[in-house]
Image (tube, rainbow, N blue to C red; front, side, top):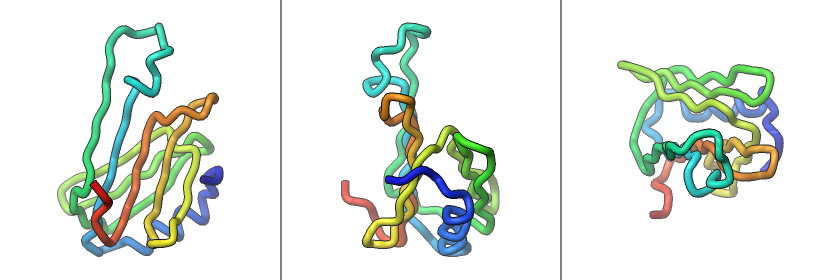
Length: 116
């Protein structure tokens, strides 16, 4: 993965506008962040191969970044994103890593289902 370039990510988001796409969204402060002692509560969220369509996709911030996807009846967003890539299948992969490289958030978009 490479550090986020806002213009490149915004261009890639446009490729998915108004299409049915597969979403992978994951957040965690659990196993990947077990070293943290500030909070004894573990939280996380996970969805894979959720099908959505969005008419607006935007990246904001100065780093870490936030990506919001405006659907007909609401929003999907991920905050704390630091890195991205477009893989050989054309999937947009966005991730937020902490200063030690551990995953904290992932948002991925694909025209085809992700492997289970």
